[in-house]
Length: 559
Image (cartoon, rainbow, N blue to C red; front, side, top):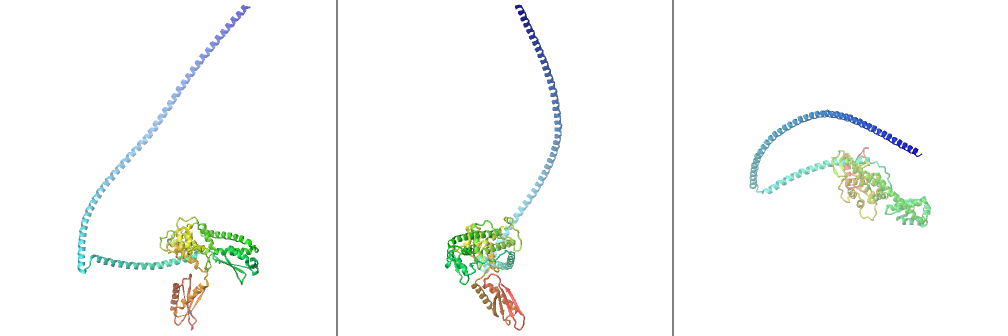
């Protein structure tokens, strides 16, 4: 059993050795094959690398050759450009040399001329010196002769000659000034009349004359007494709250509101009118009614102030000034509403300035740049409203000229002065402040804007229907005109017609003929101009009646 096991073990050991040997040989063969394939692959890679290197070298050589060809073309172009530049440099150099040579020639010529001029100047200086010496000798001889002949000193003689020359020049200048004044007087007056007529024809602002209503009426006295209570107790409370006096009419069922302050008068009238509408109101409710009416009145004042500035296209106006302009709605002068009067003056002042600017007078800078009659365009720095700044300046001054009338008696001074101080305090321009102060000659008018405000104020007050005269002033006007008419010889009677706007004079036909009647009408018109200061036109009509014939000669002249 043991030998069998030994033999099996030996066989197994031999078989394992053989298998190990076979596996070793096989692995060795694979290694050799792998090495051979690796050598083959390396060889192939080397071959490919050599081929690639040859291809790259070929491409590099081709690129090098192409660059050489391109460079050669550039070089040829550069050589051509270089040759052209050399040619141009040669030409410029040649031209420069020619100019230099020409300048040198001219310099030589100029130097020669300067030398000749200097030598000639020296000769003339010598001759001038000799002439001066000769003139000095002659002057001394003349002085000696004058001294011996007239027995007078040189200084006295010089003074007499100067005085004579000055007198002659003064006479000539006075004559020229007189001629210039006559020329300007004729042309300026004609141009001024033309501008005024043009402005008045352009001014077409709709206006309805507003008269202040100072009373409240009832249908009958019983209705009035029932509203105001026994013994008019409610009226007395209303007087106290409004600060006005109320007068009951004995003949009619109406109450008149009296007071110095026009705004308080309006407050009293509006409060009384509101009581009439409500019919029944307790005495305890009158105070609240007056407060309510006062708020409404102040709102209307503020609205009127804003409206007038808006219509005149005026920007940047302070609220205090607007409120004062609104308060003028309740102020009247000769029955003319001052609120609308200020608006009229603003429009007229702007129109006058526009026409004056067209002729060359610029209000903003106060310079006359063109003669009268020539046209001038507006500057391009007009505001966004399309209205030139000089026109707005004139409108502003015209509108503000009577703002002082809205102030009460606590401010001392005339309305022009206190109005100017008020707008100056609230930041208005100095030229506007001075124009407001000067419109009634409280200060001397100096600038064109001052005279424009004065002219526009006169136009607004003098237009037909603007103002109503009092009975006393009207009677005084009529008596003055009658006195002037009767002061001339040959006048039989005088009649005042058309509310003082026409004077009709009846003359003696035996003493006054047609020619003298014409002269008489002119004399009467001239005397009215000298002695009267009424605005508007006064027509003078001279009537010469012949009893033996039907013909009646009329000669008219206007003031």
